[in-house]
Length: 305
Image 1 (cartoon, rainbow, N blue to C red):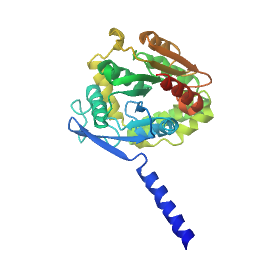
Image 2: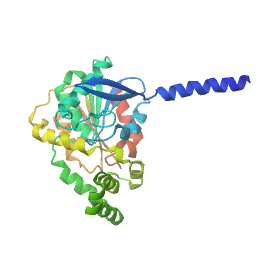
Image 3: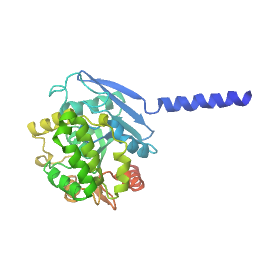
Image 4: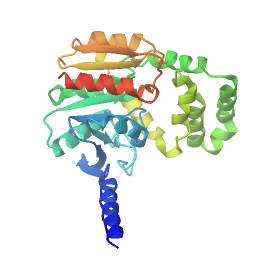
């Protein structure tokens, strides 16, 4: 009887930890509830995912990796997940509003500064945030960042396509068929992304970690279109703005990332106090292909500050 009571008490304790770990918190920003989750303890790190339009769930594995040493703050960006407005238009979804959301979270948490980590498109957004709010960023980490030149997408796509096998291309053709796109356009695009996923990786076997867990709900293309329209209409181009950010910047980039090597090199030149590390045998999703190398580089970078 005593043993069963002890077991039950331990069960309740573990359940309480699991139930509170990563629970959603919210802050109201410009009329919209913005939701975020916190994983781990230590130096606060804002995690900005890619897309635009990705569900924050796509970056839980990144938080799992880094939360062993840091306090990871993972946001459902405005227009995605639980942070979804009732109406999608330029008044509810924009880059400026998203930056304000980050500031609302930082203020709610009582943080004077935090480290900001951006992946892919999130790297671009992290740089824009740093440009507008430099005093709030203690350090910047750009993980497979797309950089500032939006023309990069032409060779990015070409490099992905060049790595696909005939079977991948057949699957891509299947989902690009006009009848399937018409029947369910959102699902067809998601399946097209799944078909191209091996091209993002150095080791195509590891691409299954992403492609086999993808869901239709992981992507909001309507939000993505609004953000890109906003970027082009507002002419958000940091290459025309001299960087005044002098705090440390870590640029982590897979050697075989389809973005190529010119993007991280340009970022390294833009940020004077930066360190560029190429991760060997690694594509775009570096924390999935080479988790220990990513964790080690980030641990060392933050501990040196």
